[in-house]
Image 1 (tube, rainbow, N blue to C red):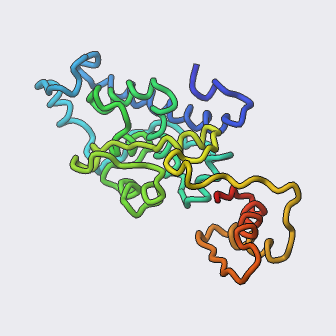
Image 2 (spheres, rainbow, N blue to C red):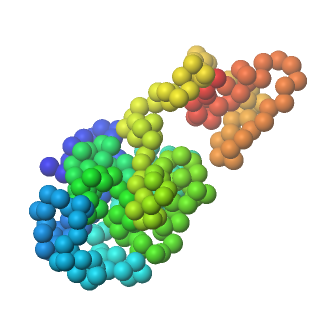
Image 3 (cartoon, rainbow, N blue to C red):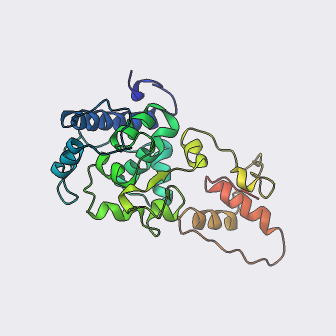
Length: 252
């Protein structure tokens, strides 16, 4: 059974469909690797390099050549994935890279398969190089810059690049647990801010006052910061009502 077949008809179906697409790409990548691997069942993979393995490395595709076709493009993002893309300005390749990095946290099979594709069974998360390969992006192409500190994936904290002392393509990618939980439908406040903020309670009747609606419109533009100047009254209540009117979850 593939990942995409597990939760049909649920709120998670869109995410499972995208993960199923990643799974098919991994299957094809494993098949291609085994075709040219002289020792595909080596239990000590990554611990040493035999002469035959060295020849295979020399004959492999270099970083400038196109990646082998691993199937059709991913289906359009929907649900929480689409909301995440809109909120953080993610392009389609960013979403694919995010899901490749997140897959081992959702399905343990990806850990073992990534270890095989990394040519090192001790490295069971996606590296930058493996993520680019699974998304059809050349390692020396512009896709690698999607993991730069100022790029949306990293600057927004959606993906963490681990082991900066390693060559870039060998660095491990990790998705924070809070991001994975959100995409799986959990909306609890991050444990790092417990005791500092809480989710504001919902009002029985929405505030439809003109000032509230103006602030809600500003908050809904995605511009980031909206500053309210206190001139008396209850600005905290006003901000909470405006965020709720904009369809956002206020934290106070």
